[in-house]
Length: 229
Ligand code: GLN
Image 1 (cartoon, rainbow, N blue to C red):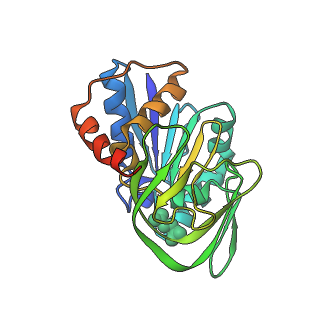
Image 2 (spheres, rainbow, N blue to C red):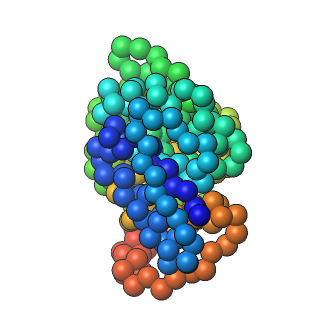
């Protein structure tokens, strides 16, 4: 049974990223891989048994509450270190970095990705498209944040920005380190880019998964291909 842990949706659910868990479960089911989504409140301990951990975007106060809860026991860091898949969107991405800075304070992150986030000078809102070496087609989503993120030496960018802002610096979006992924793409990103969901499933089960006929995703991909021109 593939265990998908949706972390603190009551805090990290502002931008609809909860759908990422449902897409993973659905696409696992297409391959007859049994999967279960477990919602974990910020009042509950984080299970150490997850195969995939998901974090979404949030308002600043909720972001801090979530980070404070996740510090207990360092379960997320230990899980990433043993190879569990972690996908963190926007505020979630900032939480799993080394630190983020608000207008009032500097906050130590969980240290899963070698990135630092600082306040930007404007809000970055709108459609975003990126090109990642992991995928043949561009990934699309929407972004809504004001902070900007800088990568350290141990983080690779998730993608290069074609349209929009992403990390807000150097034309890059997100960061990756082994099975840990951070990005600014809401959407939910896995609904809009199902091959990203499939890559995560492959990483979680540790082997290639069968391709599936997916008429809707194919039609959408035709449009995404046009972004390359
Ligand atoms: N509060 C963070 C920022 O504005 C994250 C916002 C979000 O998760 N969409 O940078």
